[in-house]
Amino acid sequence: MPLIHSVQAREILDSRGYPTIETTMELDNGVVVSASVPSGTSTGKHEAVELRDNDASRMFGKGVLKAVQNVNAIIGPAVVGQDPSRQTALDQLLVNLDGTPNKSKLGANAILSVSLAGARAGAATVGMPLYQYFKEKYQLIQTYHMPIPAFNMINGGAHGAGNLDFQEFHVVPASNKTFTQALQLGVEVFMQLEKVLIAKSAVHSTGIEGGFAPNLYSNTDAFQLFFETFRELPYTIGQDVFLGIDAASNFFYSGGKYKIRDRSEPFSVDQMIQYYKEIREQFHVFSVEDGLSEDDMDGWKKLTAELQNSTIIVGDDFLTTNKERVLKAVEEKACTGIIVKPNQIGTVSETVEVVKIARDAGWQIIFSHRSGETTDDFIADFAVGCGSDYVKFGAPDRGERVVKYNRLSKIASELGL
Image (cartoon, rainbow, N blue to C red; front, top):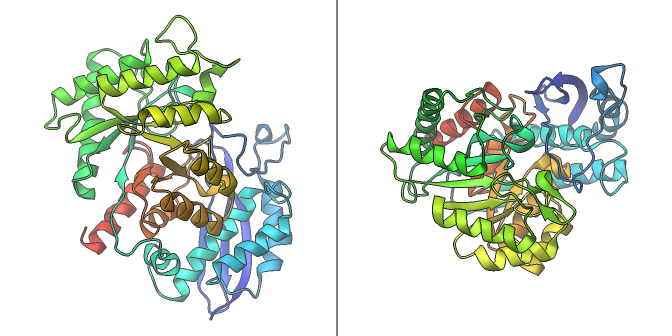
């Protein structure tokens, strides 16, 4: 098998204009591949450490030259001569090189850039598309299916303009639609939503994930906007399409209470759960992501027990694609779905291990982008090859989001799905 000949990293910019890292890997047979790493805005405190320079005199401290140097001076020389198709061994070498439980020495961004490039190189050595390589290598699925896109149409919280508490409001096509039909639905909703916002003289600029960031008075107003939008479209909420939210509740959680603008007084855990029940019934909200704070295991157990029959209870900041946290949540019956973000844990192999645990537990799998994205479409192939049920790639807008939807369209065409 071809072996790794050289590795070279450099600093590039993500979709927010923040620095991130791209790594190019060359094999001894002349194959050259590259991979870039996304970065989050709203991050869970249990995520692997993204190494930043913290040099206030440059890029306001956001530079990643240390991570780049760690790839070029430490990781690169260590992986030269390795077989990129032996992903688990490659990733274990990276983990051992770092030697910390959260990848804080070399940086999860540095490590992941090499892990992703290694997977892409492995696929190239056997002449397979990346999604097929993952399917054959890890055998998490027997047959292909296309993931359902959860379009982030309205941005709030840390992603928005400061007037909505919930971070994301999703439009999710029904599972009986093909990917092409689902994408068409998403695009048409996006276009019609813009028209509705303009008619209301509402701000219709877009947030950092491509969704609109309108000036609304409450979270409930966002749901009402969707209902107005669908009145002009040939789709029925609760039949053709459903709504979902990423509450990202750490944003509005303080002192054991949840403060949202829909109510004058802060909510207790029980009151917050009751609120989710109400919006489920009123607005067909079928998925709630990070509905409670990331360390409230008892609250998550109660939320899941009370809503799991009608709603997918999804962990993101709560789980951070972390094996130990996922195993604990499975044991406590604290979730029914997981957001999968490779940069939360730092390697391809560890990500796959988490997906397998979640799937064995019967959870819904949702592969996700980050708010600070690049034009790398790796995550689209990864999602298909691992049998993801859903994907979160933002609105059908902005190049760094659209490139992932376009990649899924190409895969669907190749597979005849």
